[in-house]
Image (cartoon, rainbow, N blue to C red; front, side, top):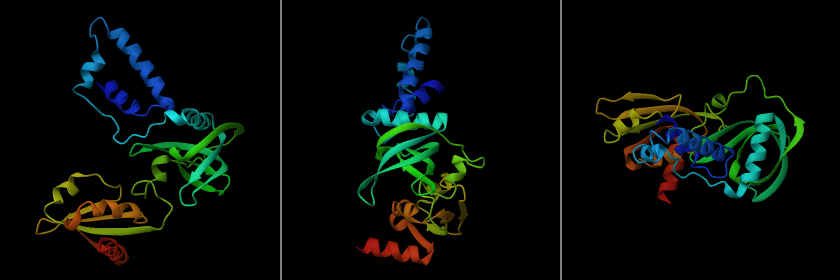
Amino acid sequence: AALALAGNMVLSFPGSPFFGAMRRALRKIQGLAQADQPNAFDLLGARLWAGVRRARPYAKSEVWFREVYTGLQRRRTVQIKYYTLERDAEVLREIDPYGMQIHEGAFYIVGWCHLRKARRTFLMDRIRYARATEKRFTVPADFSLKDHFKHAWNIIRDKALVTVTVRFAKTVAPIIEEGRWHESQKIERCADGAVLFTAGVAGWDEIKGWIMTYGDAAVILEPVDLREEMLKELTA
């Protein structure tokens, strides 16, 4: 059952370096179990499912994906052509891939950008070309993928840390209390059944969208600038 669930998730990403390996592994296991449990994984799939919703297809970028992953595995600098959304341009650059994370159906690569001379996060979907070079790099001893995104609400982590406090009405309070939304979260129940949610995040661009999903059941208490910004957007 555990392997079936893991397989569901990995097989949601055709074209990734992990897709073929997982499919071969499941086929081997199924072959060994065929005599006692024919179609074991098919039967489990009807009752257990862990596919990744909105998973990005990587079939068209399979070669580039493998080159990036080779660089990550072997600690080799990778030359990439990266599309920057803000500038609407493709830029050739070299990166040292330190780690890789899946978030909301997409792969993100964290590493050192030789062009910007800084640690950056790259969306795999925007890599138009990649080639692992023979240049070797060393991952900083203090690097941790988990710590890298510690203050991010989702992926953005290079903005100033801000404390956001939101009052959620009684109608949605149980949903907020049940969730593990952020490592820094603090939830306090009010006398009327509402809850105060507080978190320290890198900028408010990402948490703003989450707050909006609760409509008038969410009231921003601080920062005031965020409340005014959302008021303008909602009015528009």
